[in-house]
Length: 270
View 1 (cartoon, rainbow, N blue to C red):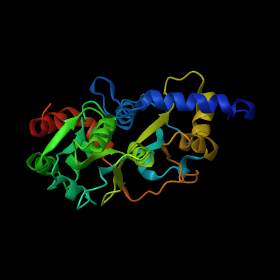
View 2 (view 1 turned 30 degrees about the vertical axis):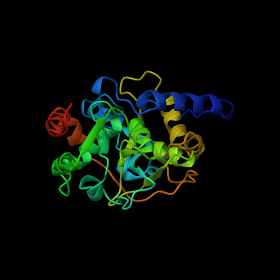
View 3 (view 1 turned 135 degrees about the vertical axis):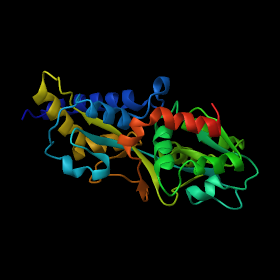
View 4 (view 1 turned 90 degrees about the horizontal axis):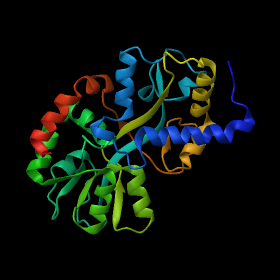
């Protein structure tokens, strides 16, 4: 197996971060309504487009964030962001959905933001929630915005009492002094991951596999952590508190993406 030479570590790390940014965008935008890369990778794998192999360090990645053909590199956790002056702060997804706040709750658009599609895949397909989760939100008062960052800014400005967003965005706003608080909800944050894999048609298989193993290594995962995103490898250094996570069934979510979005829009709107 070809290894990444130490003198190329910096370059390889830079490439890794560029690839990750291209996959999800700095604001988690999903271009032209495409779902999150984990769902896209699932579809590619089912079409036989990804190489089946096992990186030497594959087992360092939790089972929920790896398959036989692709592996998680960073986690994007959907959490609750709320005003810091609420009389009753929502601590669970149920409390967010059935809220009684002065201002509405904000949701990012799953047809635009890949992470929001991951949340839709979880809630719509989980027996504990189903589409009743979104129906309850619609009845309680919900406003859809385009991206998770708009949820945070809207809560900070007082247009929304709370909403669903990404942990990094809520945490950074809170640390910057915005009047918001990040809540890690029960039964868990919805974990969406950015995957890496090797194409089945790749000509340079050994370098591609070596690069993949590097991205999954603690060294590269620590570099990812420095960007503010949680590394998928739990052995990496991560200074921020976390909690339990839940995840969608990516295979079913990918297969049913059009139907899920259609039903969601019938409840929440375009």
